[in-house]
Length: 376
Image 1 (spheres, rainbow, N blue to C red):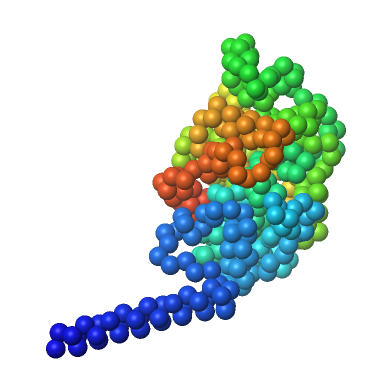
Image 2 (cartoon, rainbow, N blue to C red):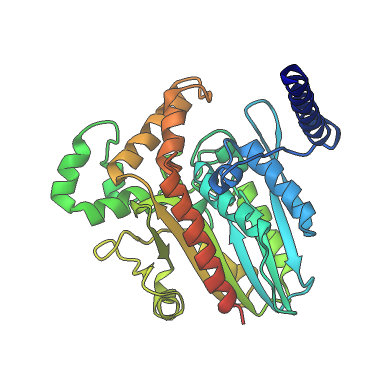
């Protein structure tokens, strides 16, 4: 009797294993669907690399019934892969109001923004009849694929939207700053940290191999994204835009950075996380050529409410050090992904810490809900 029971149990286990194996094989290799069994939400949406994030985004847009468009780019990935900006569109074809959510303008910072977007598309909100949700996934795919903050020309794309301004100039302090020595310590004492912060990260247009280089012209990514918005959103009267970044502020907390002229309007709308763009009073600071300055030029008829959602990771010193080391490897080493500088840079802008990632998803959802309330 005991042997009979054992044989029966063994047969049941074999049947279950076989059925499970068949299910996995069918979904992974026949239907070409990713299999994510018993994964926590952060694991499902925080992707290990750009190409996984891109595949997940494209698949979920199709599953959710969105319209998927791609802006092709000339740059390529580490193995010669083609790159492009994938854009999901939900709602009205000619909307009066738009919620525009973007990620990855700073390449390696795109892991958090992509995760928020995948979470959003897993549970789409109800939109007003004349509204659209537009999700721009990783505006700087080269940077995310190569684990760089900058694009293929070493341009900081959030310093590249100058409009009619000349692509020239650099703060005097930047010219005197040697990021590879301890001279920065003396400059902090002489000028103060807020002044030094603006000098380093506010944007410069004279040192092509330096950090925070804004370029010498409108980059391909910038030009094509601006043209897409200008051509497709001619009917828009109200735009709420959220662009996600990481690396500034307190660990696991977010701040909402805005243009100086918009602070008085956006603070009452989105609350105390909207910080004054003044390095003396907050972690925010003014920059030249920011993405948020472009919307008014692309959509001159629209009333624009633009926010940069910035999630804090590590100290400013650690962030700057990680950027410096990766930049050194890019220009004076092989620039490949297998170097510790790349791994450290990714961790610096997207910590493995599950509590950090859960906080990003929580606040990402909360801000999107606030934006929807302010869409009309």
